[in-house]
Amino acid sequence: MTDVAVKTARPSPLALTGWDRLKTNRSWLAFWFMLPAAAFLILFLAYPLGLGVWLSFTDAKIGRSGVFIGVENYEWLWDDSVFWLSVFNTLLYTGVASAVKFAVGLYLALLLNENLPFKAMLRAIVLIPFIVPTVLSAIAFWWIYDAQFSIVSWSLRHLGLISGNIDFLGDIWNARWSVIFANIWRGVPFVAITLLAGLQTVSPSLYEAAIIDGASSWQIFRYITYPLLTPIIAVVMTFSVLFTFTDFQLIWVLTRGGPVNATQLMATLSYQRAILGGQLGEGAAISTAMIPFLLAAILISWFGLQRRKWQQGESND
Amino acid sequence: MTEMLASKLAEPKQVLTGVSPAADHSEGMSYLERLPRRLITLYLPLFIILAVLLFPFYWMALTAIKPDEQLLDLERFNPFWTWNPTFKHIYKLLFETDYPRWLWNTMLVAICATVLSIIASVLAAYAIVRLRYKGAQWVGGAIFLAYLVPPSILFIPLASVVFQYGLFDTPFALILTYPTILIPFSTWLLMGYFKTIPFELEECALIDGASRWQILTKIVLPLAIPGLISSFIFCFTLCWNEFIYALTFLSSTQNKTVPVAIVNEFVDGDIYRWGSLMAGALVGSLPLVILYAFFVEHYVSAMTGAVKE
Image (tube, rainbow over all chains, first blue to last red; front, side, top):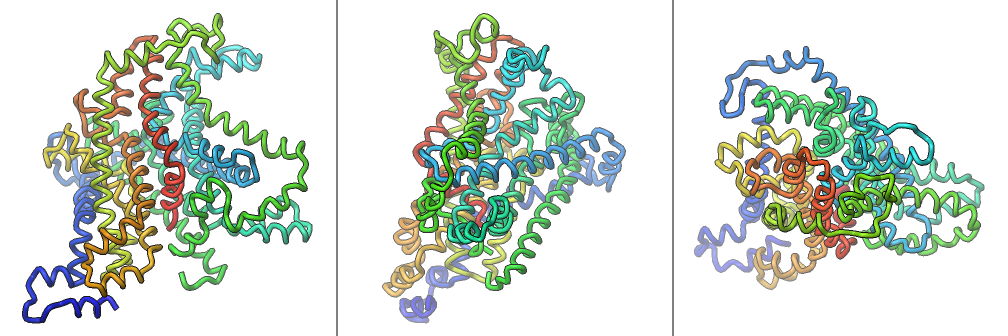
């Protein structure tokens, strides 16, 4: 259809200049349309991605391009207890935070899906933590977690629940739970609102039928809501896991990886080693070591989706 | 894939108001639940979650307007309220520090990067959806994958690229690198919008002799304005939120963006720094919150669009 229309607009084959070719040939046109986006993504995304992997095999330092040293950086990291601690921290951080974000986010989405007064306003308010820049809300958390003047310690003390102030960011496990809590706080609105968007497409007649059949509210959730929501859950949780795993801002503001590397994530460790320590090669090796984890997360959710589709017997999408 | 999830997500307007064809008669059953029961199972948990979500902002705003002596004396003054608010911290922030300059930097970088990304994304999304060149589907998939590449694994090699191109410590370092985060996202979002525009409109225009460029600017773009607004404000928010690139690629104080400057410049040994820190965080968040208040629906559509695979 397109081609026919374009051909009739053409004056004659003889007067075909380069400009005409450019205007009418779809492939050429597509090339020009794709050019700006492709240029950005190749120059500043694909090339650095490759360069990062290459750097991890060199001994580059800031201001000095390195020479190829094979897997020496990785061997060095293999024996580095701080690196393994950061892997442990990252997995703990991602695992706990994502699980809680999913549970609370789904719960909040179910609550918001009810018939409520001021529904639109409530839903808009829920999203605010997601809108405010992470660093700025992290600073508020920093103040809330202050060792001496924490409002949480004060309230608990006045309720008679604790006798002394809690050292939120100074103690190893306290610091871990504190940063995980701040991350959950930041992530719940995203999960809740996207799941809510999925929930609203579930037809109410399914629920009505289930109630008539005498299903309990848990059964309704388990056998109607959850299966219908699975595809969107898979996508949302992939995003959530990816961005939690590579988190940097929150940790950097709250603890900078401390106390004694208790909250050091792979991203913060690579920043410390590469930019503050100047060891670009080693930092790049740490970042590259994150890639297999990310790929695993993407593949798991991808195959989860495929299986789902296969079960539902949909073939045309 | 795309169609599958698209049909499983509600429209943004519905998400906010709950008015949808599917939800139209959803009130039907709720009268069966009595109020006391709803109070415990619905309103109480909702209230607790909302209180936790909003408390940090209340605390931020309150700290920003509290006088210094009340800030640290939790015994003599009720910490949850203040009867004599002061604008000292905000005044100090705006007139005695480089804060306006940092705000300006952030704004400039965010607007330039967003505009660049939207132009590139409009062209790319149109080409992928409508020109349907050979391999367009693969390019679409590659763009989605690019969206999943996080900044924290790119900043080290990007730092050396930025250095090689001579962009280090200039706003251009950020204006040119932020689109790598924004283009995949907004292309993906706009592809979804362009798909909803009837192809027949374009066919008519083609028969009338319009060029592809005319079709794009006179037919497709005016119809995709909600999508453009969504991707614009969402990209703007992402730029404002970005931290690790700004932290790595900028070094001089006057070039910094708000998030980096607050973390690096305000943190000194002063025990009374909390007032100005919170004022900085509050003033830095306000532009986005105000923008959000006007475009709630577009934000929601951008967010749900981002996960429509």
